[in-house]
Image (cartoon, rainbow, N blue to C red; front, side):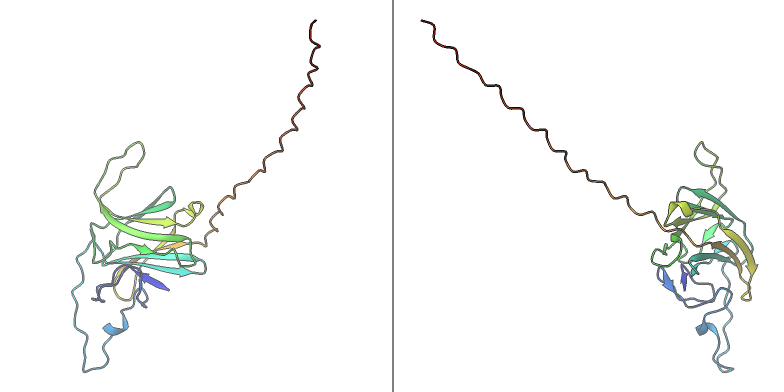
Length: 204
């Protein structure tokens, strides 16, 4: 099952957050394919270079694949921060709806969500490395132990668009919440009987 954060330029209708689009990366949606010679396809203007045009997610065999689409090649780098993977894309602008969060919690995969935002260049600090301007996609994991860098491959597909694919292996189960141990109160020791006091006889 494929989730879309935004359409490719061939698909002009906006997608709702986490909507299943029923399309395959590199292939135009069925409604963009002309029905016959009487309905030729209208030429569409591609988005400007440097635009993130599409974010997609697909659960696969317990794992997951996330992809990013643009009209031309772009650089991809990764770093792990806590329970999230930060993916930096060398693109200056977000495309239509690509800022929307993708909720992946209810699929059989190790990821819980994806959200992208534009960032400015920043110098290195004690807690964070230097960052170039571009787009950062934060990929959150269900189990912090699964947070890791993905296997990356890139390709220019049949639709002429450039894709960066991030593949994640099957995750581990989230650790169960610890059950508190309830100790029964120890029985109190039996109280010692009070000593008997013998009254003294009255003094004559």
